[in-house]
Amino acid sequence: MLAPIRFAETSFARSLPGRTVDPTAIRKYVTPLVIPPAMPPTKTKRKFDYYEIAVRQFRQQILPPGLPATTVWSYGSVDHPSSFNYPAFTIEARHRRSIQVKWINDLVDKHGCFLPHLLPIDQTLHWANPPGGKQHRDSNGTDQTPYRGPVPLVTHVHGNHTFDYSDGYAEAWYLPDASNIPKGYAREGSFYKFFKKKSPLGHDWDTGEVVFEYGNDQPANTQWYHDHTLGMTRANVYAGPAGFYLLRGGPNDLPRGYLPGPAPQVGDRPGKRYYEIPLAVQDRSFNNDGSLFYPNSRAFFDGFTGPYAPDSDVPPIWNPEFFANTIVVNGKTWPALGVEPRRYRFRILNGCNSRFLIFKLVSNPLAPRPAPAVLPLWVIGAEGGFLPAPVSLDNLLMSPAERADVIVDFTGLPVGTEIYLINEGPDEPFNGQPGTFADPATTGQVMKFKVVPLTSRDTSTPPDRLKLPAPSPLGAETNRRQVSLNEQDSAVLPDVGPVITLLGTVQNGAAVPLKWDDKITENPALNSTEVWEMYNFTADAHPIHIHEVQFQVLDRQPIDGNPRPPEPWERGFKDTVIAYPGEITRVKAKFDLPGQYVWHCHIVEHEDNEMMRPYHIGPIPPSLP
Ligand SMILES: [Cu+2]
Image (cartoon, protein in one colour):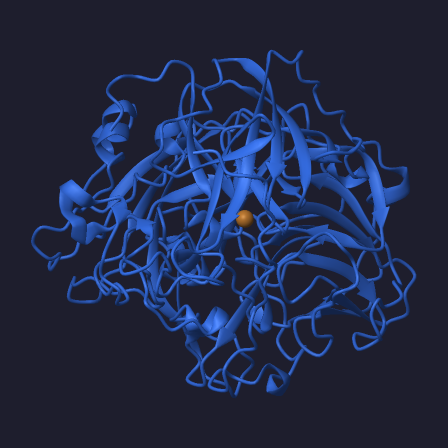
């Protein structure tokens, strides 16, 4: 299955149809930023914290007052009904203190009947496929209509170092415990029972729920939790369920008070002031009734109206990428935050499906692009923890799922000063070249900061004087492998593409694209330290995420060129890295927990259509499902 090196044509998003809320008519900066509180535990035990967290459907005001509310899904503590919020409350974890979470799929109505999906699900992709029953679950369906049955979910804590049975494997999904699951439907994915048997907590797994454990034995870092179900992550996450998981303490953290803080903790009094704030930045579009808009046809992407799979190889609903027309931060469109003239620590997440963001702080959000920066973004950490030293940036590029730990110093600014966080990334797939800017009137803006009077002295350390804990070095490389990133146009219809995105291997410099169900090709030995050379044979950049590990970016190079070092803000540990078109991106990691994991593109539209591969650490058991 050797394919020649080929560069797919760049694909562009069409402007959204008139029936979505006109983004230019949505008033900006009228809604205060919501700072997600800390998720309350169900029980605090001697050796671990225990949470019971469900995904439920509810309505939330995402658009400004005066516009309709939006039906969303998100997580919350079942013991604290007011904790259900989009984005979810933040799980606060301590170094080497375990957390157990009972993750409950509670997408049922008040009669106990299942709730169908809020968004159109393409059944012809290789997806969970509950209607296929035990025989055909986790495969391509043949029904061209959107799926209206019970919704599978499985939660992954992104950036967490945990065993495979707690990692939220894409085929370990489960339906809600609803009273009306249609006869013959698979209630669980192919790996659910396998991991239930393998997990020491498997005896506590019940219908519609699992119990996962997180040992938190890694350096302090910024993680996030979200759904990871096979072939439908793009829709499940777009519907809302996602939250931060912040790990603190241990030898790789800094003493309290050295950085700006505090962040929300359980039991805080109302009105407490926070100087460490997580920012989940996502693009969303809305129908006129306030509901979430997501494309319901391939035609939305390129006007192609059929024939669709299984009568061709073009999925009927799946879009290769989706770019929404508003920016939502912590569950509100274009919010505003009053900031004191002091330092703030922001944990920034690009939570978009496809959109790469380039952040900048400016005084005029409508200034011609590129706009002049008025304040630097001091990056102190990436996904895996702190950088070796702070990096001052005017532009901060973040691909989907990347996190940045950032200090902004508002010290000395007069009360009333307005500073805007803008986005100078493109409204289309990112190819690494600057100069294509999101619409300055809409998706080119993110949020506003307005300086308010100082209420207490700032005792944190200025960013240029910060001494950050050194990342622990990885051992010597024990193996090196080549992997590939691929997109394919239709094999049966001329000029229709892309119809599928794939990972794979490399043989004699050429791509060997592989699908989710192909034999495992990445099989690092337990405790090996490997270098993965990722060849991007496509025309666009892809954010590549490897589960289980935090890696170091070694270098990048054009496929026939010379290597260059990683960017200054990529020199800590990471779990997601941008692989540029026509380039090799090298990362190095130690694979130190045995089991079955995944690596994938975090453009979730790609992930859902074959751009994800299982990989196995240590000997592959003959009993794998
Ligand atoms: Cu991709």
